[in-house]
Length: 600
Image (cartoon, rainbow, N blue to C red; front, side, top):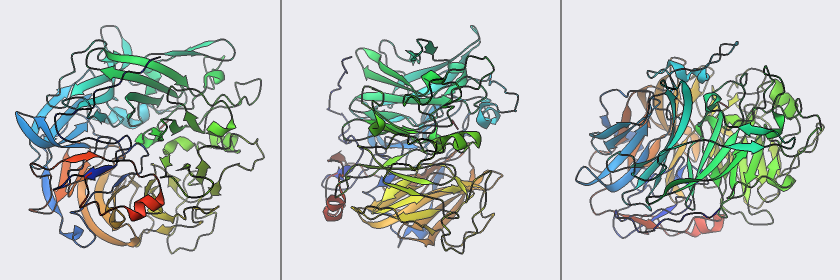
């Protein structure tokens, strides 16, 4: 199909590259955060933060806390536009989506509410399994259902910028569940008046047995963050949290233009051949949830993600076919072309054990690294619930080597307990795992990868570009952590001025879900530099850092912290497009960015 392309002129004087790396124009930097973890590699790094440094972060104070309380839990990451048209002027604006199928737009400096819109009736009829698993706990939020779960994405090539997101809804008149993809004017919150907008998600595929598998929205949820790449919107879907009901992993792609609206481009199913012949299962599964982490895209537009438990063998009498991808890393072409060979997917050799013990890969999302020196320039890093870290060549991902292994990937790093890493930290055991629970997508900065684990601690692995074993075997861990310090944590975020002044930001919480925002020196996790209580947490919210302000969304409010008199994008500030950072050498020699434009 032909892909629509958008005009490139924006009325608000800033542009973003395909991977979100921006350079600063003469004058003040005004960084925008328009997608989960800042860019389509999902590195989680804002490299143009010149105001917050390890030296001054201890002086942060609360700028505002919003009111009234949200109508539903906020579980994604806040998005930020600097000096954007809204409310009859241009302002810095931060956006929050909720499980009540609603979005809020706040002034990013004062917390003033510009608009609040509801885009449908939340799905308040969660299914109930015999094991008591209902919508993965989302049913206990104030809206009693799952609404907007995945972090939206903002397209700045449309004027004013447009926001795309998926709602989960229930139509009481027809007793039907549905998911809809929306396009919203960020200036007003109104749906864009275009044909086929919003559009109901739908699709089907034909498996190798000739059976048609049709998308069933009742049992599916769009938890991964939205991906916008080269004018194409990608939606990832998995189950609502239970593998006891018929569900699959799906990826759907759409284009959008103000004149013609949404047009579906392609549909992919992760486990189409594993459909159960019995109405009682076991079901195919293989969902894409990634604890809210987004699908990723490389410079060629290829799409990457991790899948949850998939019954790769039970319903497949022909044995392994290399066409079904439970518990796998998967690479699709921009048009969602399926992996044609082992070079485009990786399934751990012990996938049967992962399935039987609920140790799926899908609890995290992958991060793509900038181009590397040497023979393997294109690398992906991801991990699973047992905190086994997989370093994968994106050009030759390794496929499946059979139940006896070993895995055919660049590097396979076991969890710190199994590797007997020297540490004063007592790693808790979780379920059937060694070490702690691996949740949330890792992030990358300056030759380090950062991981959160539940119930802890934070970990930093050193990375050696060009090495045959680039990831350190053992991490450095958060200083002062002891068992019981906290119950869970979000995927972290990084703010830095290029390769200097790196800060690692994370939200942790107790089993009461009362949270704490914490900042560490990114070069030394033994140095915690800032901490503040931030109310109850609804999901796995990554902090958003932009122009000297840190934004955290809780179950019911948005909180902002900054340095008095310094934080915020001032009128006249702007950012312009820059090329993505492609290799370590470019990063190390880049000009000072403060002077350059820029559950399954």
